[in-house]
Amino acid sequence: MLYVATARIAYVAAGLGLFIVGAIGVWRITPHVRDRVTIWIHPWTQHKVFCPLSGQMDLRQNCQSFQLVKSLYSIGNGEYAGTGLGKGTFQTVAGKQIIPDLNTDFIYSALAQELGLIGAAALLLVYMIFVLRGMRIALLAQDGFSKLAAAGLTFGFALQTFIIVGGILRIIPLTGITLPFVSYGGSSVVANFLLLAGLLLISNRANRDMLR
Image (tube, rainbow, N blue to C red; front, side, top):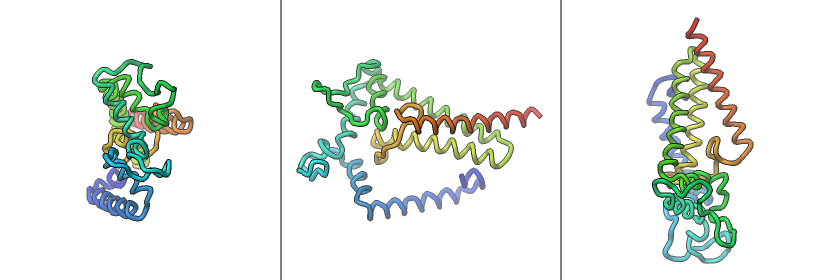
């Protein structure tokens, strides 16, 4: 937002620096964040570690990183073309869900398995087009407020998508947020449609100003 408003890269660099310092500080003083980072870097273990969920010693992939590991296996199982819609292996023979919270946090894993690499990449391409159109709206807006609003809404959408997809693919530590317009959750869907409505309003105003 500061870069859009001022076009000064120094503000972006300063913001990134402060973010890195803050992230390291939170990692050092917050056990929950340390656990998240550990699960991200070392989801598999060859020796048993303490499992806070059961209070016993177990392999990390059977405890804290269970969701992430099973999610990665599901994505790999989809290969290039996928297993087909409705044909993903998300339950055991006993009916137990392999990936907990599959319909919310890990919906991208289900899509990647059933649609394969092609379908998963196509979904990301749709998100990229959305972001590019949002940035175009910001560029076409005539007044400063509309430019900042469009850029902010678009960046928020892109950041939400990157955080959840990046977490599932082990690019960044996993955190529980929804995938826009795909994950189950009423408040998330409403919020994203409001975001889309805001961009459309700004685009409509920009088009009217250009026609005058």
